[in-house]
Image (cartoon, rainbow, N blue to C red; front, side, top):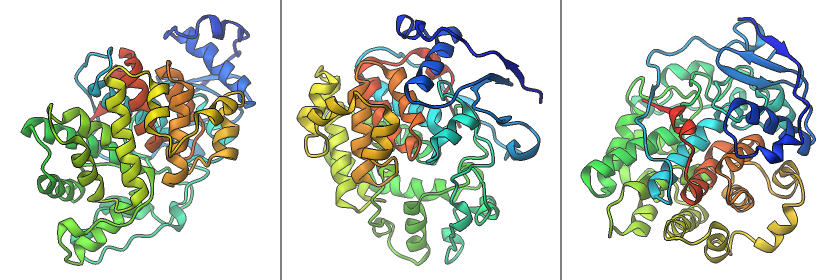
Length: 402
């Protein structure tokens, strides 16, 4: 595959005037403007297949050498059906979480943000991941299931212990990571049955995770491994959850809320669902807070007002007003950690939602570009901004699921 280099654009001043445009030119300008504001290097522009990358040096993702993508596992992703993209609805919140995850996926768990720009440019459209991943910790990660009932890695196990492996190396552009694949399955089950059934979902979760070829993610979070270690040891399915304190526990909240019928005990269902895998008080508190925020926004409360009212124990709007004068890469990196622990990740997601309260596109792009656990922060940022603003259909067209 040959990559043709073009000269960079020189029209940063038009970024403000054309902020809302969704065509290539405005995306091109916004990308350079974002790099400029955040102090990141930017030189030429590279086209590779259908993806547009703004490069900071290097050759990016190619079919040979260090940027080679692994051979795909059979079973490609298919586009999801079209949805209405405008209005304050829980369906938009659900779709927004999927879009934010898919957009962030190539840069997931990048902590060297200059490397993220070097490898992918600005994540303003869905792109496929490439090896090597400079911040991957798979080389020091292990999982040894007690028996086949815990074998959730299967064909992916050979990549654990190797350096440079991207966590989502086999996913296509626009495809969702595992926790959001589970979210789409949960949404389907609850929507079709008309209610949330804890045991039915627990059984489906186990069946999906043990189903060969159902997902193509190489990395599985600690809570999956902990759950299936206990399950393989013979513990009751309702007792397999661990005290996991990561923001990944919020990934399915928008999907669940969107599928529940009117009049359902939505707070009780969210708590019961998240506690199946995440028995940590702060994760349960954050899940309840996100649910209350989404309900408040779709009832017509402006997003910033909802955050001030419902998330005061997590987030200070007064501090946010001061932070907003600084670059996102400073706030999420120096003031708040970009990592996955809920006590930092949830406030970081709330800050981005607050700052970009009226701009879905800008918010999810900013979330993707500050790296760290951007996929799981996307459950918060994407759902809140989509509930408040709707989603441009171009994002939905690019979204895929099995």
